[in-house]
Length: 114
Image (cartoon, rainbow, N blue to C red; front, side):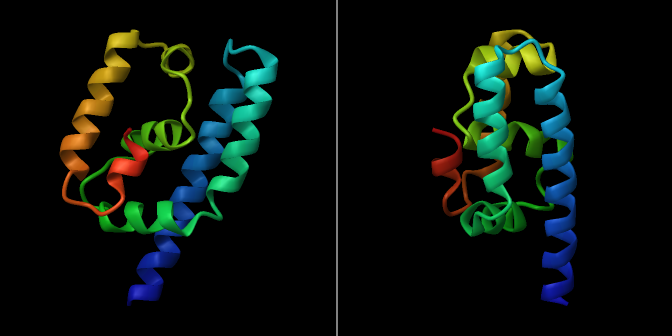
């Protein structure tokens, strides 16, 4: 059962990574930054630490939360996140705050939400 759940989680994470990749590609971010973020995103699926955190918090976070988590994990600039999702900069900080609250009991969440 655990391997099936992990397999499903991997599938979901990869789908969200692909969607985020599309969002980065079509954003108004400077091309050099786009390429940098796309390269970091391509390596994220291989990171076991991130996968463990997402598995632990799976029933607490939404797919939208996961998109933001990936952005925060990549240390994406707040201004770029704001541009990509067409939201105010203050909303990005609000999302980060809410995710910290959701994940505060999870090991390693402090690494994602610095």
